[in-house]
Image: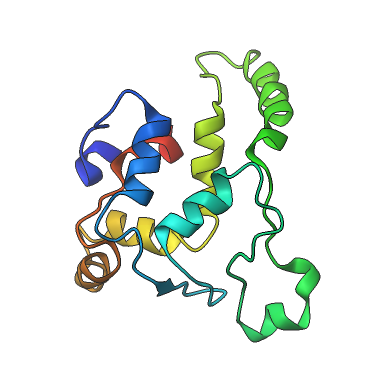
Length: 157
């Protein structure tokens, strides 16, 4: 399971723990460029891109790869976290009909959104560094020891 790769959840307050992992660690402000869409960013910026309610006008990091430059309407857009609340409620209504299913929480949804952006490079480096030498180097370079354990537990839940 996930605990073997990243250890146990370290905090009961998932929201606070995820924020700390992205804004208060040694790698929080270290710029990196995502491997897929060539977005230059850092963990702190990506955290706020996903969690900030009122920054639609802010100049967020953008895709720099040729494919996205040719189709700017496909580029990512800041979306207020509160806009997902209704969808989470609808999904939870569906989950009630499935035996043994757990409710989906907004922090889990926001962590999944983090995973679908540039931070997937860091999260994959954490998960794969235990078995693949290339990713050990990537983990050390990108994450600087930050295992993002609470975030990865939220994504996995």
